[in-house]
Amino acid sequence: MIYDIIIIGGGPAGLTAAVYASRARLSTLLIEKSGCGGQMVITDLLENYPGFNGGVNGFDLSMKLEAQAKEFGTVIAYDEVVDLELEGDIKRIVAVNDAYEAKTVIIAAGANIKKLGIDGEEKFIGNGISFCAVCDAPFFKEKDVLVVGGGDSALQEAVYLAKFAKNVVLAHRRDEFRAAKILQERIQSHPNISVMLGYAPEEIIGTHSIEGVKLKNLKTLQTQILKVQGVFVFIGRRPNTDFIHKMALDEGGYIITDENMKTSVEGVFACGDIRKKLLRQVVTAASDGAQAAFSAQHYLENL
Image (cartoon, rainbow, N blue to C red; front, top):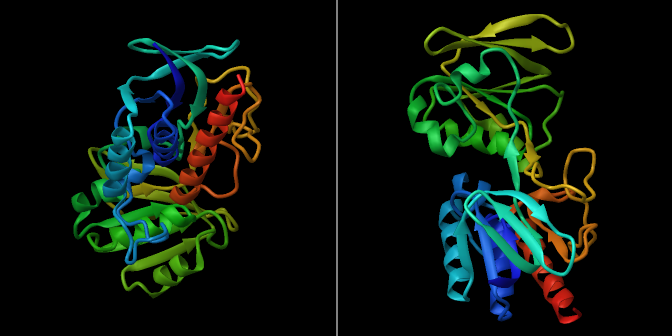
């Protein structure tokens, strides 16, 4: 079958694109590697998503979006895309289990978390090192933990962790946080969260479990051992563009689009965290997805 639109990725951008595309009566296939929702699934509370006083749980919102897309007729295939053949009027998507064809493609594959890249990290991933407080916070009840990062995610996760951990230390390599002021205020007023600005982790220490982290003061270059039993890493993401070739990317590997989500390849659009943009939030991902679907619809009408 040749679909009108194939959407790669089932996060908030991809799901919103699917809602708009299938509601416009376009045959729509969404290809997702694992489960729908993307990073939204592991977010305990979205406080700044419009229309939800008191916030909304990320998993709940993702399930509602998925159900909405299916209700309008979106077909979901659980498969991993490995290559794209985008020349010509019919685009071919090569995945692990099958190959799929469509007249137009929307890439919404998102971005993955970045690792610290220091000694001891790989040894303890899943055994003391986590990239998701919502997933793993209960394992660190009454323990001392380190959170690494300075953006919204790092501060939000530190506050969530403080519900479980005895002490939370928040370390950031810069002299100030990049996070929203309201989050900084919560950190500063929290009784069991302490802050170490201008510090970067150099090594995870431990034999069978984490016993501490070597931190370096980036001004004095002196190091110290912080005794913790867990480390949570929130230092950014890298775009999932390994399968993308012959398309304009920026220096960070993000897809370059115009305001209508058009890429450098005719008939191919990109939306959400995978594209070059200033603000990466669920609300902007949803906006991107709606625009991408509308642009794809316009493209199809003019074939």
